[in-house]
Image (cartoon, rainbow, N blue to C red; front, side):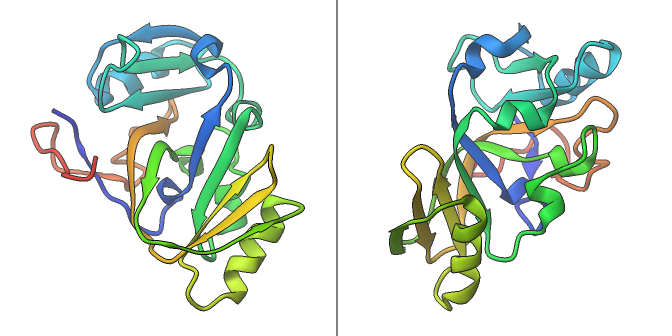
Length: 183
């Protein structure tokens, strides 16, 4: 059973998907509850951040990484965020609560517009100008920009930092006996 993740206006609403080679870039994989995954990362000086999954699709659900989070996300093909997401979420300081973001997400709602955009910044700016856009998704390889008409996302992975657990970052409520339906 997993913690209840609060999907609010935090950086947790920002997601990275299609991260090539990420299965090979972690240095330790475990099967642990979210709180223990964070603790393992905290006690290992090599750990820069961790990724925790609500399933063990790869045989494990806790992955520790020694590279900076900013380097890791450069290898992700897709990024998605709510309209008006702050720059400190899009370029978070290492080992800050702004690194607490999502992965393996599906989005609710319909695509209200699809176009080619020169950058993720242009895609985000386009969403800000379209009234029906609630969330944007940018595909780095194809430069495709999707404007989505709903805020909802269902995610199966979360990134965390060694120094603070997710509840200290304001993202988890309750205990590990409750499970949010969308997660």
